[in-house]
Amino acid sequence: MSRKKYLIVMAAGSGTRMGATMPKQFIELEGEAILQMTIEVFLRACPDIHVITVLPESHMGYWRDYCLKRNFICPQILVKGGITRFHSVRNALSKVPDGALVAVHDGVRPLVSEAFIKEMFAKAESVPALIPVIPCVDTMKVLGTRKTADGEELYTMEGQTADRSVLFGAQTPQIFHSEVIKEAYAQAYDTAFTDDASVVLKNGKNLSYHIGERFNIKITTQDDLVLAKAILSLSLSPSCSS
Ligand code: C5P
Image 1: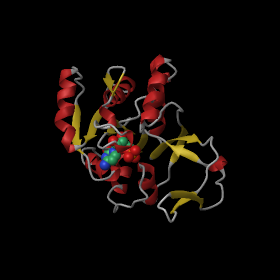
Image 2 (image 1 turned 90 degrees about the vertical axis):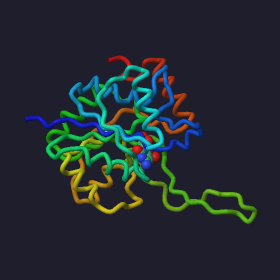
Image 3 (image 1 turned 135 degrees about the vertical axis):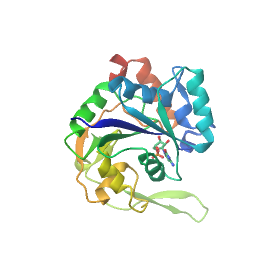
Image 4 (image 1 turned 45 degrees about the vertical axis):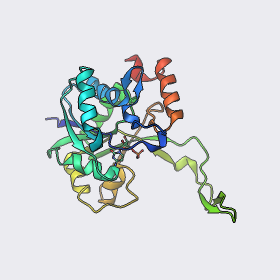
């Protein structure tokens, strides 16, 4: 029998890199909050999915009102975010039973396609941890910074140019058997935990990989917002054409 599906949608960040007063997950793209678009693509892919939305405590009321006003009636468990993404995920996992498949997805990645979500869930039934990755196309430099006498910050070479043929960018949704990710998140926090895969790996579990989607961008800066609008308006994203 297949496992029940859960989505933990991460939206408790403050979005300071966007430079806007409103956290980026609530900014509207084509008249709809980025967070709503993100949840909707999962609901289209898996109508029976259980949605857990992780929000800043300060914006829980705002999100409830927004959903009511927009008649966005998807049943959601709302969970308060933590000090880091790790702590936010850990809070949400307390709502997930064992024996489920749990997708952890950034609330600011609304352009993931329905077909990709279905593919990932199908593959995740047979592996404990499945991570979407994108091959690195740029030449990567390892740099540090130093301050000059007059306070200017300069970049300096810290190591060899990395071999890009072995470098991949990790995306979300990352999908786990719930007992595997819950056990991993019982560990103490480490600053090296920048995604869920790193937490599960540190707990000694194997990861499996699936090539991700180029347009599944994490909307982080104003430039990303421009890019996301362009992708949507040109209907280039697979999620737009389905
Ligand atoms: O900061 P970063 O870009 O890694 O954030 C990725 C996702 O994690 C965002 O969707 C953000 O809202 C979420 N996040 C969170 N709780 C935090 C920090 C980030 O849910 N404390």
